[in-house]
Image 1 (tube, rainbow, N blue to C red):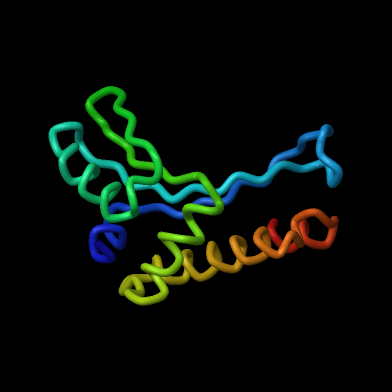
Image 2: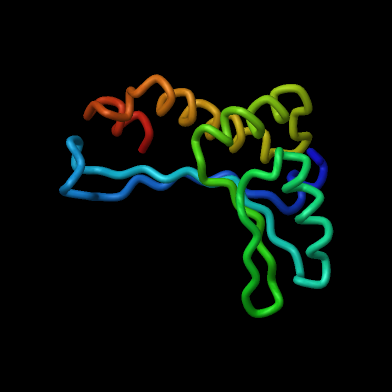
Length: 119
């Protein structure tokens, strides 16, 4: 699993303006992996490994497995990569992603200082 994410996975955090939010920003987090649609079975296996959480979508012969729920990421993804670290430089991205998840879980993103730290 870890090797597959090392080559094909992505951890992302988006902070964007949203005047409806107290801090003026919204945050989204995503763990994602893409494959040719002919390899959907791999993505379904990964989804099953992560407790059936997330979704698989297909477009233009590319399938994407994505988890965007903070709860699911903290329950399934973070424990996996904490036990089985990535071996490439993607580990550095994961560590930053993990810090952001912890910041969100601790509700620090609800402050201006927390938004600055996320950025």
